[in-house]
Image 1: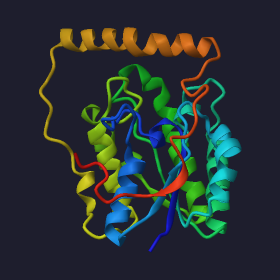
Image 2 (image 1 turned 120 degrees about the vertical axis):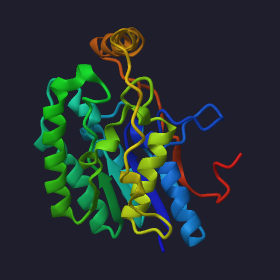
Image 3 (image 1 turned 120 degrees about the horizontal axis):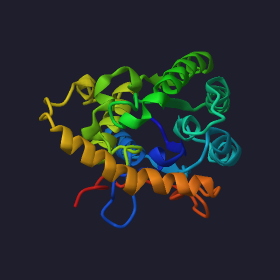
Image 4 (image 1 turned 60 degrees about the vertical axis):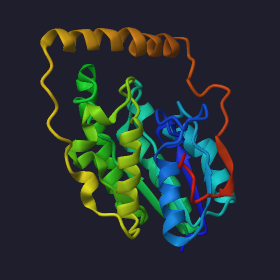
Length: 259
């Protein structure tokens, strides 16, 4: 029975784009915490993740506060923001992830992490990044094997790259995607009532006409890609001046998310 769960990471751990109905975001970490709490009758949960953070910043800013909270369950998920940067180095990113995993494992925590989905089916313009993601996933697999953390190999399952599980910005899971990641983590953690159904593909999607595809790509470029490029050219981050949404471990209500 775990007493305290602490999640560290970037926007995916923070919960974008899974609205909580109150102006914030829920996400797979909240959903996983709820699954653990229901399975064992209670859990304290803190989420230190902040959007836009690179793996090095997560290690520098979130690891020590996480250790200070003395969790016996933790998730360490990072790397997507690094993949998007020109200076990307898969081994360096995996090394930072491994250092965070090892510190938490050595303190007595069960640590879970996961590999990243292939971005190409979700974001066709991101095909040049596919090699980077594959390299990162291989490095994460090797790092996790060394540290004793538990790996959910999400990237090995094609359903994780189904566009219907991703939000309009194509960088974050939607509510259905976050729900599936949480179910995968619950299964990986051995919680009762969860199985490998999260690996099953969605029903075949209707074929879209070429004009529809082109229009969708144009709209995404205008609405999401160009603002992202402008922000990064200015040296700005979506996480500037933001703080963790749940910095203090609080009990998880078992009716959380209902109504």
